[in-house]
Length: 172
Image (cartoon, rainbow, N blue to C red; front, side, top):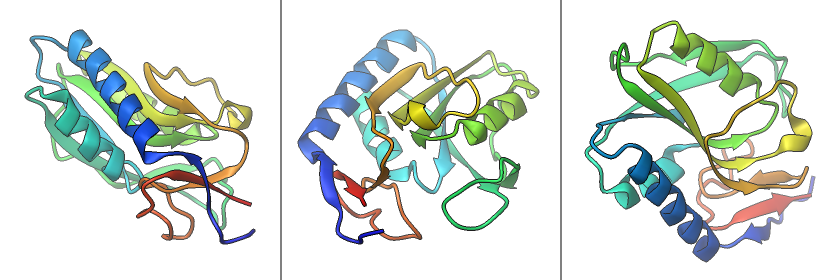
């Protein structure tokens, strides 16, 4: 794997898409105060920009999940490493994810949260890599579909590196 990231999606394009996603979310949640639930660590940059762009009275919380196993592949076994701080029963919950790859983590989280009986549960993802899905995933608000390449930047990392990049980049 080369360590020289090549831009795939520019910061300007990301900003446009975040603004468009925020407009749709603002319309759908008018008159409500949703809880935005970021999946750590990758979602924090996207979520910060999204919250600023929304202009809605939202609450935020984070959850940290982990897949067993090492390297860049998941074993499919997901566990909660850091749970919710906010009660979600009867709340409108919007999950904010950086990238949907296999779909296993998001699927696990949706099932986990449904048991807590939120009023509504939707998913907003900056990027989706549908070629890698192992389970069906419904993304209610999607920024980009990306090719089957390893992407980094704008919060998305490889071994804790490259989160700081303003563009979404490919690493070969």
